[in-house]
Length: 167
Image (cartoon, rainbow, N blue to C red; front, side):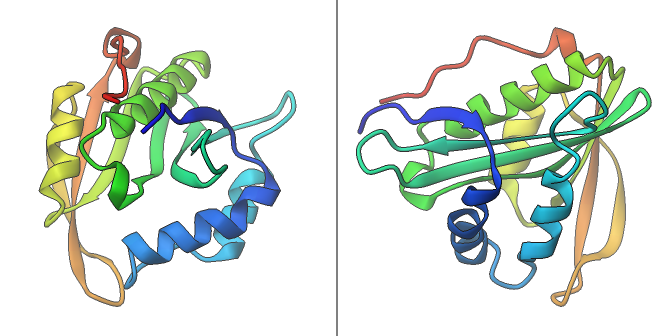
């Protein structure tokens, strides 16, 4: 398996990202409109969002994506996902590193995120980067009524580590 290429997400990536989103998060997948709305704020001098996709150089398939929103000095990881056949390759860490670089570029002092309480794999990734659990949002993920673990990272610039994809 060759290393996926990270690049800025564009509007033409929405359909393949939606396919991956529905596969990974069947009960609470983002809608097309949610992606369109966030991408509308991802370019230009007033941009407050950064979205990336990871593309397989072998077949051009989108195998991961991530997005971040910034407001003032706080950023929020909106979404991050890796195709099942790329789990365990380090791609999630590479995507998270890019999102933290974006938070630093936005001059954010903190990065927040919500993670399903049953998504232990993601929680471990975030903890490796220094995120700490600070609370819960009851029934955050609908329609399954699944709670979210709220996590916070102070000073994202110190957490951007050299990450590589295990190929």
